[in-house]
Image (cartoon, rainbow, N blue to C red; front, side, top):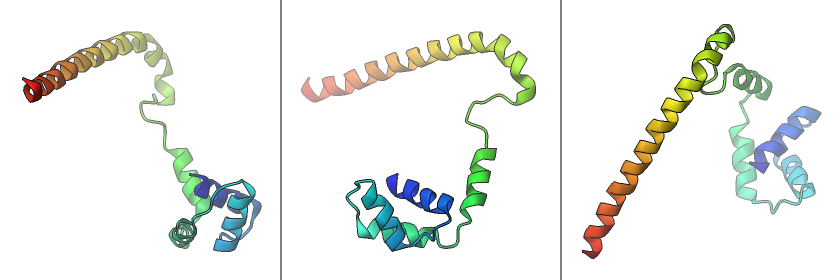
Length: 109
Protein backbone atom coordinates (compact mmCIF):
# COMPACT_ATOMS: atom_id res chain seq x y z
CA UNK A 1 0.00 0.00 0.00
CA UNK A 2 2.88 2.33 0.73
CA UNK A 3 3.92 2.09 -2.93
CA UNK A 4 0.54 3.44 -4.03
CA UNK A 5 0.69 6.17 -1.40
CA UNK A 6 4.12 7.19 -2.69
CA UNK A 7 2.73 7.41 -6.22
CA UNK A 8 -0.16 9.56 -4.94
CA UNK A 9 2.30 11.87 -3.19
CA UNK A 10 4.27 12.27 -6.41
CA UNK A 11 1.07 12.94 -8.33
CA UNK A 12 -0.11 15.52 -5.78
CA UNK A 13 3.21 17.38 -5.89
CA UNK A 14 3.30 17.36 -9.68
CA UNK A 15 6.37 15.16 -9.89
CA UNK A 16 6.76 12.49 -12.55
CA UNK A 17 5.93 8.99 -11.36
CA UNK A 18 9.05 7.10 -12.33
CA UNK A 19 11.25 4.51 -10.65
CA UNK A 20 13.77 7.00 -9.25
CA UNK A 21 11.17 9.34 -7.76
CA UNK A 22 9.07 6.51 -6.35
CA UNK A 23 12.13 4.88 -4.79
CA UNK A 24 13.21 8.21 -3.26
CA UNK A 25 9.81 8.78 -1.63
CA UNK A 26 9.69 5.23 -0.28
CA UNK A 27 13.23 5.42 1.10
CA UNK A 28 12.46 8.78 2.72
CA UNK A 29 9.52 7.09 4.46
CA UNK A 30 11.81 4.32 5.72
CA UNK A 31 10.38 1.58 3.51
CA UNK A 32 12.57 -1.36 2.50
CA UNK A 33 12.11 -0.86 -1.25
CA UNK A 34 11.60 -3.83 -3.59
CA UNK A 35 12.76 -2.82 -7.05
CA UNK A 36 10.40 -5.26 -8.77
CA UNK A 37 7.36 -3.73 -7.05
CA UNK A 38 8.49 -0.23 -8.02
CA UNK A 39 8.88 -1.27 -11.66
CA UNK A 40 5.50 -3.03 -11.66
CA UNK A 41 3.71 0.00 -10.21
CA UNK A 42 5.34 2.44 -12.62
CA UNK A 43 4.37 0.18 -15.53
CA UNK A 44 0.80 -0.22 -14.24
CA UNK A 45 0.34 3.55 -13.86
CA UNK A 46 1.87 4.39 -17.23
CA UNK A 47 -1.48 4.92 -19.03
CA UNK A 48 -3.59 5.84 -15.99
CA UNK A 49 -4.99 9.31 -15.40
CA UNK A 50 -4.70 9.35 -11.60
CA UNK A 51 -6.91 12.43 -11.15
CA UNK A 52 -9.69 10.76 -13.14
CA UNK A 53 -9.29 7.54 -11.16
CA UNK A 54 -9.56 9.45 -7.88
CA UNK A 55 -12.68 11.30 -9.04
CA UNK A 56 -14.27 8.03 -10.17
CA UNK A 57 -13.49 6.35 -6.86
CA UNK A 58 -14.87 9.32 -4.90
CA UNK A 59 -18.10 9.26 -6.92
CA UNK A 60 -18.86 5.65 -6.02
CA UNK A 61 -20.82 5.52 -2.74
CA UNK A 62 -19.62 3.20 -0.02
CA UNK A 63 -21.25 -0.22 0.05
CA UNK A 64 -24.53 -0.12 1.93
CA UNK A 65 -24.80 3.65 1.92
CA UNK A 66 -28.31 4.98 1.51
CA UNK A 67 -28.97 7.51 -1.25
CA UNK A 68 -29.24 11.08 0.04
CA UNK A 69 -33.03 11.28 -0.49
CA UNK A 70 -33.66 8.22 1.66
CA UNK A 71 -31.94 9.48 4.82
CA UNK A 72 -35.15 9.78 6.86
CA UNK A 73 -36.40 6.37 5.76
CA UNK A 74 -33.04 4.82 6.58
CA UNK A 75 -33.19 6.24 10.11
CA UNK A 76 -36.66 4.75 10.69
CA UNK A 77 -35.91 1.30 9.31
CA UNK A 78 -32.24 1.14 10.26
CA UNK A 79 -32.66 -0.21 13.80
CA UNK A 80 -35.01 -3.04 12.82
CA UNK A 81 -32.88 -4.04 9.85
CA UNK A 82 -29.70 -3.96 11.93
CA UNK A 83 -31.26 -6.20 14.59
CA UNK A 84 -32.49 -8.66 11.94
CA UNK A 85 -29.07 -8.72 10.29
CA UNK A 86 -27.34 -9.33 13.63
CA UNK A 87 -29.72 -12.19 14.47
CA UNK A 88 -29.23 -13.81 11.06
CA UNK A 89 -25.47 -13.43 11.36
CA UNK A 90 -25.44 -15.08 14.79
CA UNK A 91 -27.47 -18.01 13.46
CA UNK A 92 -25.03 -18.45 10.57
CA UNK A 93 -22.09 -18.38 12.97
CA UNK A 94 -23.70 -21.05 15.15
CA UNK A 95 -24.41 -23.23 12.10
CA UNK A 96 -20.82 -22.81 10.90
CA UNK A 97 -19.47 -23.78 14.31
CA UNK A 98 -21.70 -26.88 14.44
CA UNK A 99 -20.71 -27.93 10.92
CA UNK A 100 -17.02 -27.43 11.53
CA UNK A 101 -17.23 -29.35 14.80
CA UNK A 102 -18.83 -32.33 13.06
CA UNK A 103 -16.06 -32.38 10.47
CA UNK A 104 -13.32 -32.35 13.09
CA UNK A 105 -15.07 -35.05 15.10
CA UNK A 106 -15.00 -37.38 12.15
CA UNK A 107 -11.25 -36.93 11.85
CA UNK A 108 -10.62 -38.07 15.41
CA UNK A 109 -13.68 -40.26 15.92
